[in-house]
Image (cartoon, rainbow, N blue to C red; front, side):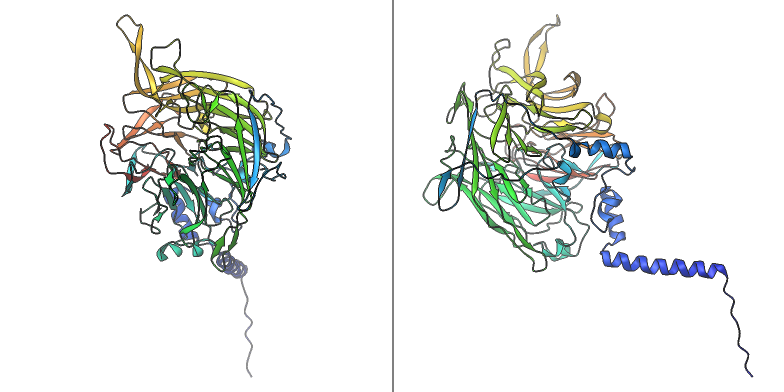
Length: 618
């Protein structure tokens, strides 16, 4: 007769069983979410990505900091969504605007329907990981994604790549900021990248259009080519933009004119299919709606809102084009079917299409900034324009004191319930109170809702020879973190005082200047001046740590890259690299890495080999 044995299970067994079940369920959930935490952790350690930003199964970024936000911080950050901002400014400084709608078959003047381009705030523009347009987004307020871990305060070149020349232009030019993007997992398999990268979810792609007519693609960490260059056959000077909805389409315009089949000098804008790596669509030519129709190049970096391309041109027109994008990730296809081109143009007293000698020049070289349904842009004639994107009506205009190529930068002050815009002009007018050849570049802080100037500051700069203007061509940086009180600007052709033995300023020498202004009243907090060719058209890049410490990367036209500790107040020089050629382009950063290109000119003007560099801040 057999005897049944009764097993007694200890409480620790049930604990072990529960933990085992939880572990299995957790592994299943991780597998279904498609998240490889080992790869993510490796990427985060290399690029200092926030853990939650890319590890969330829903793909919801939680911010660049590691500390949780308090309820008060969240409320202040979201105050913009709760506050009914309205632009009340109405002084147009004598300027007027008009609109035309045309497609391939017909041209007509009309008041367009409301375009529906309003943004809640800048965070609503995109959820992509990286720097996907000039200045990262609609406020044009950062050239860096994520935070950096800085201990040694040194820079180390990690890779370089030689690029080419087309005609008189080589390398990368102004604004020339690269794009840095970590593609979403569902988009990656559809991309036209080399096979090894289709299975590498943690790679960051560098996208860099160049003056040799090619668009280059690299792996940020290794410098390997992720795909073959795409050639459009004309020099590309500006910064491209990616579709902010994460769809694989790239938008970029030519910086020069070239002859078409009929021998007419024209310029074109391109939509690049990043699945086929071919031009999907182009538009341009000579636009006779423009007051400056003989020159219609595209230096501006566009924004894309509600599937509508917003693209300013040097002809003085802003194009609003509904793209009607169709993307099927399962089939691996993408296309656009652009609708009508809605075109905004302007005019005003003393504007001239062909000669800027003593007159204002038509054209947009800056990139527009957008807040809600308000668009802010600076023009070559020296005005800030505020435009309602729904009605395409000019709301107000502010005289900035000179040709303004630097992009306007927006700063939302939720606590004060207002919005500010910062502008920086070039120098093209001789000042009566200065020696021959010298004038003023003007910095302004403007209440973006009223158009009223909060403060205005002049800095002495070289007037130029007509073909090249000095002053502030670089886009300012609005500080945050430990430098939240500062506005950092970079100048070319800065007037460096020449002081005689008696302490009197006897004249000015040509140089560069980095200046930090107090955002409250424009007081100069610090200024760094350099002699000769070490001046700046490259915009200042500021990389922040999780603690809010700020490190300024300044690239000058003598070929130097300088790293400053901007949180010290004394602007200590931490590290310097010599890239051997002029740097006109603005760098972009992802974590601890930044990428920048050089021109084909050495500091003395002789030809040299243009390159693209990736540099790590350590």
